[in-house]
Image (cartoon, rainbow, N blue to C red; front, side):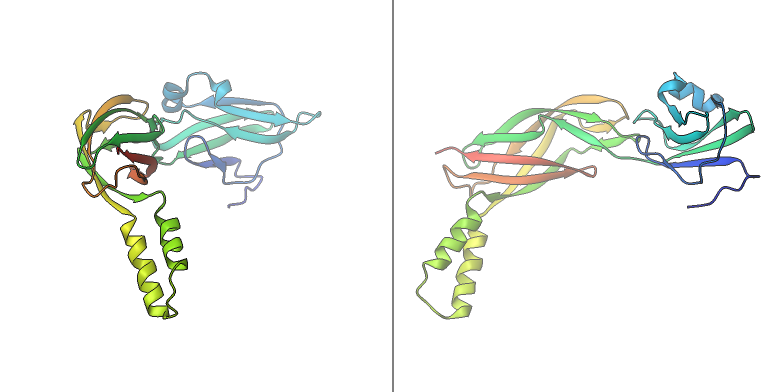
Length: 235
């Protein structure tokens, strides 16, 4: 973090839109008015919701806070703080931020082994850079009881051979793997702009190795976000 001398009179905020941190010292000034430049004015609207400050009883500046719209474009923005001791330059360096949300927050699937299941999911881009909804993907899933079953099977063994015990435990853990869910986006793939949302139709092929009556779980990683996936295999 850089130090601000009394002659520099400048402030630097850096970070994603909702977490802009002050990267220079806070000056001691009295009376304050925030004036964004033309570029910043065109994207923030009401300045009172963007720039907040707190003063003590004497009017001396104690705290500054900058909060911009989560989908503001990354880049360098500028403003001036008009004070009784002269103008202070404010540089606001907005960094890229990826944030994709999904509704429902968990993808819950039901079907028989090998079935194709269709589900609608609402994707929302709450970051400040375009994101891509890919056309296909795959997700590994695991039996909810897989680990417990592996331990129980190992505890029941009468063998004292460590290699045999470890081999049995490893084999039972592998048995818990439910295979790969194969996802195909039927409607709604492509670029999703910041602030936009889109309903996406997804076809999911369930693995043929699922055990009827068992439940499985997995995680879908997409655009730096992760979504829980559950699968219940019909009896």
